Length: 165
Image (cartoon, rainbow, N blue to C red; front, top):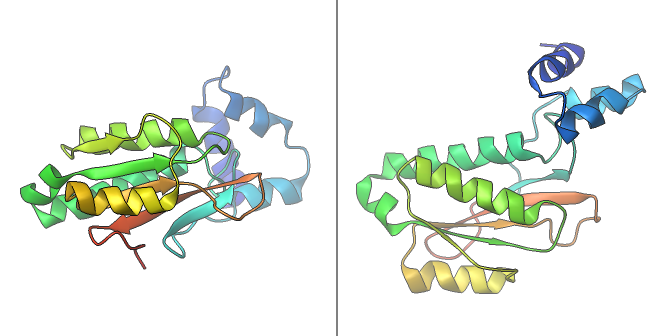
């Protein structure tokens, strides 16, 4: 599927009142549209990282949801004990971090995986500690750490508190 076909599909399926729809319809340059849809944001060093915005090559509720479902699928393959151990989810103050954290928790819970969330912002070392302290199978941090402010990320950790490679 070409990038224009992907963009057209998003336009067709997004609610007209959705801020992502407004952002998509405001994209006027073909090069910008191509950059947003020419590929799917891919899992790299410990997770996803990219600019926040509309498109398959951006951080938004759809790419975060896809990543969360991918982690859920992997945990489900580990068996019911892994699901009971659960996942700790942290986030930083970046744009949409709290929303992406909640979305991730809801997707895990919908898959029967216990999800623990912090009530507010937490640093990565605290997430790593809580994974081990609670005996969780995994952890997720919604952060883009040192990247520019227009970025956000989805970082995955395993039961040892270390980033998934």
